[in-house]
Amino acid sequence: MSHRKLHATATPRQDTALTRVGRSSPHGPACDDAGISPAYANPPLVRASTVLAGSLREWRERAALPTRDKPAAAYGRFGTPTTQAFESAMAELESAHRALCFPSGLAACTISLLALAPPGSHVLITASVYWPVREFAEETLTQLGCTVEFFNEIDADGIAARLRPDTSVVYLESPGSLTFEVCDVDHIAARCHAAGVRVVMDNTWATPVLFRPLEHGVDVSVQSATKYICGHSDCILGVAACNEETWRAVATMATRFGQTASPDDLYQGLRGLRTLGVRMRQHGASAVTLAHWLAARPEVMHVFSPVMPGHPGHAEWKRLYDGASGVFSFVLKPVPEAVLARFFDSLRAFGIGLSWGGFESLVVPVPSGRTLAMQQVQGGGQLVRIAAGLEAIEDLVEDLRQALDSMIDVSSLALSAQVA
Ligand SMILES: *Cc1c(COP(=O)(O)O)cnc(C)c1O
Image (cartoon, rainbow, N blue to C red; front, side):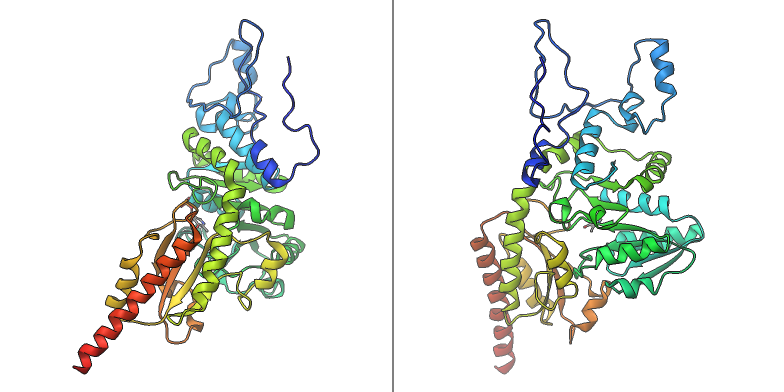
């Protein structure tokens, strides 16, 4: 008996695709004695190091295959059916040739760079890149003889002007970490390809729900699945979705460095995908409300978010992206540390902590030296990254209101103490 095909209909809309991707694993359960083969809604969670062969002939056949072409038949490090389910799901969602999983988002970023930037080549990286990727480029790529150059441009002309004959990779992060500038991705990719340069892009902010970089000419879309894809603040996972031209190079580098991910975390990633669409709508709607609400507050000097008119790349965001995710940042007017502490310590709905993409709302103070955009904010102030979770928006607004009000209380108290 064959089951109704999951993919029988025409190209499904994205919400539908999210419920189906990764479910057509060829490693479904065998028929039972009664000839019934059960179909489970979820792919099996398979943990394995050893994969047994049934005979010498089978062993020899398998040994002849490149491990990355038939991963689940070789050895646990190359993947199990759970790995295949997650990788095929991500490849489908990102319109990629194939996707590769990594033990962290950072590993997906660094291995992709290592794979595509040969020693001695010139590498261009956005200045608003995730900080640990900057450190990897500055400390490790340079050890391999690469010349690393950071750029502030988000437009194709500006980036094309920096290309050199020895440039191997342009690395984008859009929107950029901390200040969320959006790149003119498709035009940048076209100019890079015309010059024979590969484009890697960090798509963690958007996820494939809001943006699919490979449909706009990017070669490798890397992301931290730790964030929205897993979505529950309980695992660390990375993914690189590659086109046909780059997949083998990235896969080979990943194999050389022993990159793999735990089937348990991959299973959480698959589970997260099922609800990614509805979660992103709530994260995005709350972030848009909070960004506008904060922008109107007297304590707030600036809001960095692609949804704000006038933000660098706002037009590109409207043109390219299918909405907003939950992360943006804002600058609090300069106040003494004790007053700043009142704001952070008064928050109840928001936690203070790193990462984002989970169900819970977070704030984190960011060192302003890490972003050039902050130099444009007159007089400095504290940069705060904010991640809208899935709580009721009324509770989030109320929490920010009382925390900002508590700052005013304490500063007027300090003032009256001085007067007295
Ligand atoms: C968190 C993050 C990473 C790194 O991901 P991990 O899973 O924490 O290793 C990379 N890029 C961006 C934009 C991130 O926010």
